[in-house]
Amino acid sequence: MKKVLSFANLTLYGIGMIVGAGIYSVIGKAAGVAEETLGLSFLLAGGAAFLTALSYAELSSMFPKAGAEYIYLKNIFPSLPILSFVCGSMMVVAGVCTAATVATAFSGYVQETLKFSFVGLSFVVLLLFSLLNIWGLKESSRINAVFTMIEVCGLVLFIVMGMRSENFGQNLSFTPESKTFSGAAMIIFAYFGFENIVNFAEETRDPQKQLPRAIFLSVTVAGVLYILVSLSALALMNPAELAQSEGPLGAALQKTSMQAAYIVGGIAIFSTSNTVLISILSTSRIVFSMARENDLPALFKKQTKNKETPWVASLLVLTLASLMLPAGGIAVIASVSSFATMLAFSIVNLALIHLRFTEPERERPFRVPGHIGRMPIAPLLAFLTSLGLIFFFQKQVYFVGGALIGLILLFYFIRTKRNFPKS
Image (cartoon, rainbow, N blue to C red; front, side, top):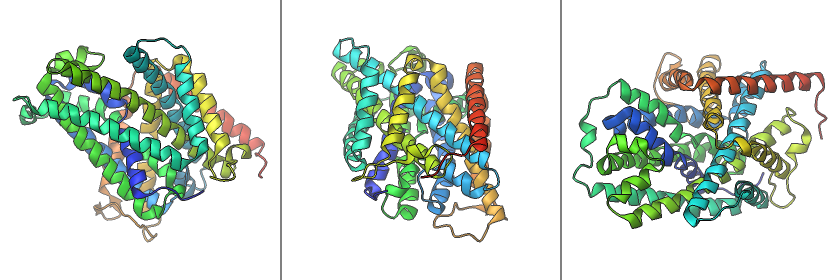
C-alpha cells in the first residue's frame, strides 16, 4: 500500500475519531451519573484509555501492518488462528455499527439544523464517504483534517464560554466517590478511536516511530479537551439539567449565547460525518488484511491500480453498514460497537503481557515503561479495566454480541472446512 500519511495526518485521524459524535451525547448521560464529580470522571476515563493506548503503541511498533488487533493476535498466538479471526471480525462489526449509527445521527443533525426531511440521507453519507475512501487516502486525509479542525474549534468555543463563568473549575475540588467511577465507566467510550489509526500502518511513513507518537498525542489532546469541556459544562449548567437535555452542549450555551449554541450545534454535523469517514476507512483496512491472510475471500484484497486503496473491502463495509441503517438509531446496536471494542482491548492487553513473558528479548521500537519482573504494570491495569468495563452494558447488548460471536464462529468453521482460494 502507498505510504502517503505523515505524523500530522495520523494524529488528525486519531483526534478526529476520538473527538467525534460521542462527546455531544455522552456528557449529558455521564453528568446524570457522576453529578458534580463529572470532571474527575473524565480524568479517570482518560487515564484508563491512555493505559490501553500504551499497549497499542508497543504492538503497533512491533507489527506495523494494516489489521491492528487481528495482526497482533495472529503473530502472538499463531497456534490459535480462531482468536485472531474472531477478534478481527468483531472489530469489523464495531466499525460497521459505528458507521451506521453515526450516519443516522448525522442525518438527524442535518435535518434538524436545515429543517428538511430526506429519508435516504444516512445512506447517501455512507456512499459518499465510501467513494472518497476508494478515491484515495491522501484525498480522504485532507477532508479529515478540515473536519477535525472544525470539531476542535467548536469545543474550544464551548470551553471559552465556560471559562467566562465564575463557577469554572470549582468541581475539581470534589473528592472521588463511587458515582465518579460509574461516570468514568460510561465516559471511557468517548475516548475510543485511537485504536483505529493503527490500521493505517502500511500507508504511513516510518510507522514504527510515528504510530506510537500519533496515538499518544491524539489521546492527550482529546483528554485535555474533554476535561475542559466537562468543567465548562458544569460551570454553565447543573448536572441534572445536563442529564435531561438531548443536546447538552448546545443547551448549556443557550443560557449565555444563542449564537454560540447554534454554531456548536452546526459543528456536530462535521463531527458525525468525520466519524463516519474514519470508521469506513479503518474498517476497510481490517477486511483487506484478513483477506490478504486468507481468512476472508481473496476478492476483498483487491486494490485500485493507481492509489492502491482496498476498493472491494470498502464496498463490503458500505453494504454491511447500509444493512444496519434500519437499526442505526437503536442504542443497543450502538453499544454493540463499544462491547466489541472493549472485548478487543482486553484481548490486546492480555496478548502484550503474554508476549513479554514468551519473547522478552524481542525487538520493541517502543516499549511500555514500568514492570515488575517480566510483568508490565500498565498493560495489566489496562486489561483489568477493560475486562471490568465489559460488565457495564445492558442485557440486550450481551444477547446481540453473543449472537454475532456465534455467527462469526460458524463462518470460521465453514471457512476451515473449505479454504478460500488464494490469488
